[in-house]
Image 1 (cartoon, rainbow, N blue to C red):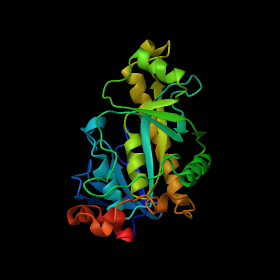
Image 2: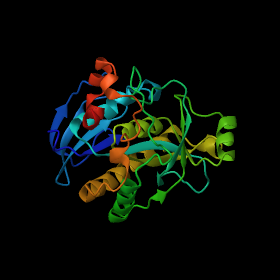
Image 3: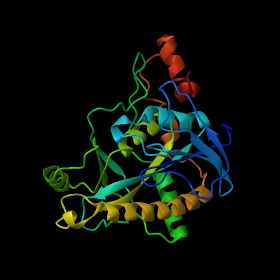
Image 4: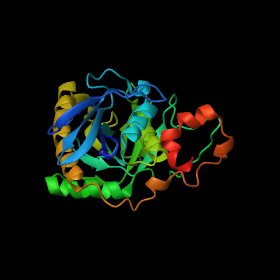
Length: 287
């Protein structure tokens, strides 16, 4: 199976399964970092073998701060994924980013406090380049796929990753706006960091459900409104994902696939055997 699955899909709030996935096999993986959020639904989509993971579990039982990001990304690496398309519900910090818009942010800003964002440590040190935190090759594919599906996609912007699970105070929301931030969510930064360390191309589709609490009409938005937007966003995201899978794979002309080439500072021959074993899937071609 490993050589078959090159495309991974992460579904966020509202996207708990992938419509159109056939010949489905439930794959429960163990990783050196513990269990992923759920079993991977490995199947055929648009003639390609893909692996789908519900980020918060298909029953939505896992808080953002409880997510085992390392296990989730490591599981995709074990399956052989070169590409991860992530979908995530977000709030808008800009008047011109409306509910139901789909955005491909190209920067992140970290406001989390209690998360592990690296596979490394315990005797092996690596510092990957992260100035451009998403894969622009994959973003191009997704943008083109939006056109294929007839769904507009906006490119660029900064995603603030907050700890949660509470949403922002108005003071926080207005501060992020004053900093020029565009979107706010609770999950995608750690995924992007770990995908880079795993040399997997990663891009997120930010699905706007509402304006953050800064907006003067915020109090008139009901939970029912947001749930409706979640469902509509999920439908649009699945159409785009299907179109993107149809276009993939493409030439990995990006640097994602060699992110660790000069990043590991430790002499791996002298690294602790236990840590080497733990990172074998990540470091295989460098050991």
